[in-house]
Every structure is written in structure tokens, then in C-alpha cells.
Length: 402
Image (cartoon, rainbow, N blue to C red; front, top):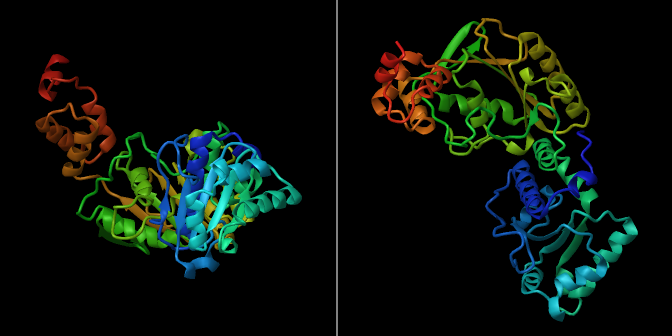
């Protein structure tokens, strides 16, 4: 869909390539509803790893639900080079002895996969590499238990194209971003990845058929996730500027918020129409839908007309797309095929908590004054807090500027 190819993959460095395999393993398990606790990867990419960079364990019963991961355990050895058959043999048998970790995979009836970001092989070349891998373990008892495979940059790109958010991450790592589009990440001005702060009072208001039902942000997050988890869901989040709408949408993909599982970050795409995205939100949804690529698309600063256009596209591609639009708009219109939610201003307690994290130099007393003055608007509160220098108080600052 995004025309990501093996040429993008071969530009990744060692650490990014290993992180990509971790992201893809995580994404594949989450898509199938399987636990991700079986993924292990750690240490510096250049450090001795015993022959495996990433290890993924899953239950054998889930074999039919997976594609690039082979139950019950798959070991990935990640290489930023074109591994020839002789190099593969040396990698598997350094100094002539089969690596213990590969012996362990044989005992577990597992799989050993070499991932090469520089390799781009024909079917014949692929078979020669697989034969070299089979020969490397041939002398081991019960060697036939081990599945071996070789993923070149083309096969790896195919794996990546199954997850729109991962595609966008790869583009960012190799300097080929699509203008105005981002994968899951800190979409707000707060780049600290700090925990989401929310009220226990009814701050999120569901607006349906003229009725308004208030709920806490945590309760609302669970409801929004439920509506977006399956393809076809369309949500419109409105509210005054500075109330934290974008931050709430970001929290939908974060663990530890609400009582439900977070949405799959690997399929999240975000854009702000104020940044003139290219392709446009309309064209992006059309491309995603045409390729039947699962995606949860978040469109910020989206006016009602554009929302209706995007909703029509999602309606035509209900098996793959979900949509969230965000806007400063508290009108009572209820677009068709859309769940509308309004986010009310934050409580003083939440604003004080945010100030304590993002403006720690402000005294506790001033945090209370700023929160009260800001009337629930986090953007105003932060702007006021940043006018204070370390050691100043709000009263001193105001009097000195009179």
C-alpha cells in the first residue's frame, strides 16, 4: 500500500533491523490474540548472543494462526549482510561445532530463521541457503525436527506490509517519511511518554440521538477501544481546545489505562490535517482499503465535511478500516455511521498533576492557582507555568510585570 519495498529494508542498521523483527513478532502475535510474553530480545546488537537475536515462543495449538512465526518456538538470527550459503554454515557452526542454541531448537521441534536485510534471492538461491542450513544440522540426532528458513529483504518487506504502523516506523528510520503521517507514538507536544492522567468524574460524554451520557475517561477509553477494535468502527471526538483530546486517543493504544487491552499500536496511523499530509487522509484511506490492510487511522483537526468523506470510505471497507477524527467542535451535529464523544475540561487535580510532571519548577501552591485560573484547559495551564522561571512564584511574576 505504501510501496515499501526491500530497498527500504536494506537501509536499516543492525539495531533497527533487530527492533523491526521484534515489532513484527509482537504485531503478528497481537493480531492473532496471542500473548506477547514469549518474545525475548536484549543486549547490544553487536554483543555475543549465542546465535539468536530474537526468540519467540508460542503454544503449538496456535500453529495454524501464524504466518512468519513457527510454533512452538522460532529463533531469529538477524544480519545486515547478504548471507551466502557458506557464511550461513559458519554462522550456525562456528569452529565446526553446532551452536548449543540451535541444538535446543531441535529438541523443542522449533525453527531457526536467518534474516538478511541485504539479501534478495531468487527461488533457486533461497533453496541453496536452506540446503546449507539443513546440511549444518544434518549430523545432529533428530535434525529433521528443526524447521529452517531464510528471510531476505523482499520477504521481510512483505511481512512489514501487513502492519501499516510498522511500515511508517520503517520509513521514519530510513528517512523516507510520508509527509504529515506518523506511526503510534507521542502525538501531542508532550514527548516524554509519561503516563496518562485522567479524572474519575464524568468527563467524557457520549452523545447519541440527542442523549448525553457522562463517564470517566477510563470508562470511556474502554468503550472507545471496544468500538474500534474490530474493523468498521468510526469515532468522532470533539471538545474545546486544550482539553486533551489527542492525548486521550493516544491512550487507547497504551497498556495500563482503563480495564481493557490496548488497541494494536502496529496498525495505528496518525495525521493532523493542519500539517497538510501527503497523501491526503482521503487518499490514504482509499489505498488502505483497496489493499485490505488493517488500520486504525486517527485524523486530528478534522472538520465535519472531511469526517463525512472519510466515514464513507470506511463504510465501503468495513473489513479492514477503523477511524477516529478529532476536532475543536462542540456542535450538536451527529454524523451518520459515527459514535460522537465530547471531552469536557479537566479537573483542577488533573491539571496540577500534569503541571507537576511537565513544569516541576512551579511550586505546589502556584500549580493550584494556575489550575484554577485555566478552567480545565491544559494548554493554557502549561503556557502560564512556562512563564515562571525557577525560584519565581506566580504572585511575584505578576507583580513584577505590572
